[in-house]
Length: 138
Length: 186
Image (spheres, rainbow over the protein chains, first blue to last red):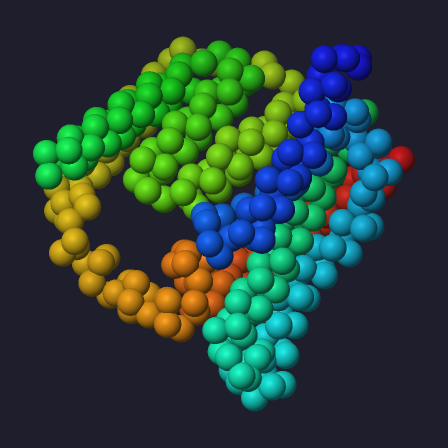
């Protein structure tokens, strides 16, 4: 039951949702939002695609295995940032040690990196959850 | 001064209005006969809560409520009723014990709420603690304009790592439960 209005609107609106999610992700330290919100919004674009065109078409775009990989990678980026700051002589997740000459730049680098990790994990976890829920309904 | 007083009153009035909507929709959830209607009502509750959070100047929370509460939770429920069907067996009997317990609990909640500090006062305990440090030192320590992002990602980075781990673990749990069922069905 492919509705032409639904599929046209979906194709039209998905790029804007993705762009908005990226804006929320990388603008999070200036405006409201951050990794968590960006991940959920990014996932909602994929869910819209999966609901409109079917789960299997969405899975060819982004498979369960890829999502599991991204989910783990996001958490690894977050925890890895902490490990890097430890190796550079600071406490766990003390971003000042990421850039010795200017601690403020170190803080910004750290926040950008861990927000990326949060975004990746939340996006893949939510999308994977819906793949699992929608997949075995047939 | 008069302008700002008007704004404040307008804000409180809008919050009360949307709280009333939330109350009405909750009653709708209780009395609805169809699971689909229940899900749509709870989604509308989330939308109203989004507006309330935005009026309370908490855009981060409002954004999360709109994305998670109104969109994703609704989708989880919709995906679930595609499995279990949307019929709802309703009993029209009233359990006197249950109603009494709920009435007592509700009375206690309203009674205890009298002791809460008044809404929005700067002298409230919640504004006395570490929040002053964050307000004054975020620019110096972190150098970013959003205090919320600074607290979440830097000052309380360890907590956020825990939250991300919770989401990761939740997805692992769903994978362990539903992923296995899928392979069995094939």
